[in-house]
Length: 214
Ligand code: SF4
Ligand code: SF4
Image (cartoon, rainbow, N blue to C red; front, side, top):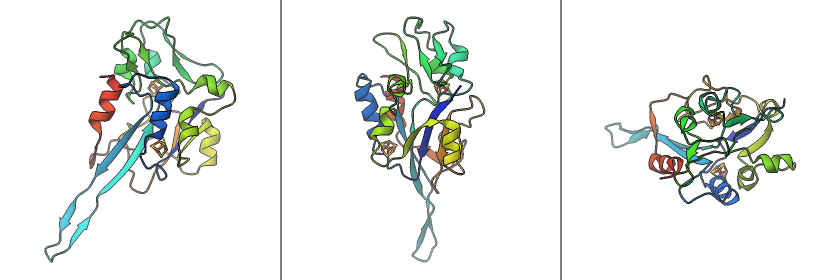
């Protein structure tokens, strides 16, 4: 099986949200639901040297996150109705609407807060890696839309081989230990490791509300 996944270059990403909007448009999502979300992670402080000068260790960067189509998807393992499947050929993880009972366990157990529950249909929803486009030989719409070419998609092992020194998580993402995510990230110089406590998500309301579909 080829395991498809995303490469994300945090040194290139400007946080413009074109990926997020292109996905919302292509998937015709309700106003308050986004499958790909862009986290603004910021931290640091200014220090008064006492001589009229200040030093700064402030930083800010962005993390564009869709589904990581994990090798060990917690969403799939915890779905009580077997409504989540990992494709045998591509490794892409998708929800089968006909089997979904809206239990919401995928929403609760994905460590990346990827799945959302559509309050109108009561069905779980998430990024499926644009499986229809991939089957047609195209890239996911977010990858094609990114003006900075900060996203790539393909065989995750080939992406890791093509880009040296990638990691599978930067703050505010958790470590990849739980699910083995199919993501390769080029960490920008400011990027902090998963579990970092020096910074915070600056747009928490935005990413939480769109995740919850509120
Ligand atoms: S990122 Fe979350 S929703 Fe996507 S496969 Fe992994 S556990 Fe499932
Ligand atoms: S479109 Fe590209 S540059 Fe803009 S937020 Fe998404 S990944 Fe970052």
